[in-house]
Image 1 (tube, rainbow, N blue to C red):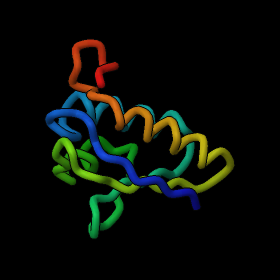
Image 2 (cartoon, rainbow, N blue to C red):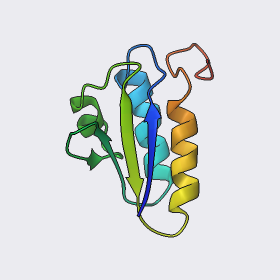
Image 3 (cartoon, helix red, strand yellow):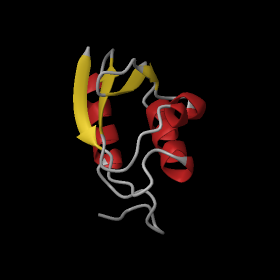
Image 4 (cartoon, rainbow, N blue to C red):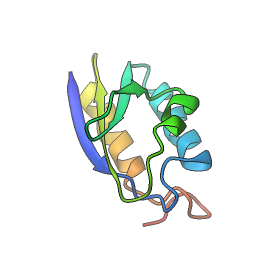
Length: 94
């Protein structure tokens, strides 16, 4: 199982637009991917309801896990996504 930790760069955290973009990207990997706050239980990263229920604010660290062929590459892509401000108008902010 591959694992990565990343700080969520979006100003409002994983709510609305950032959560939607993240869950779509997680689903596109075709792998079982989970996301968890520090010390929290992991949830299905492809479910917008589960991801939003975590209440992850901007600047908080989360842990992503994936299993299967290509898990490392899939997590690298998800880490890169969460490292950007997805609230920026074009979704490609700092």
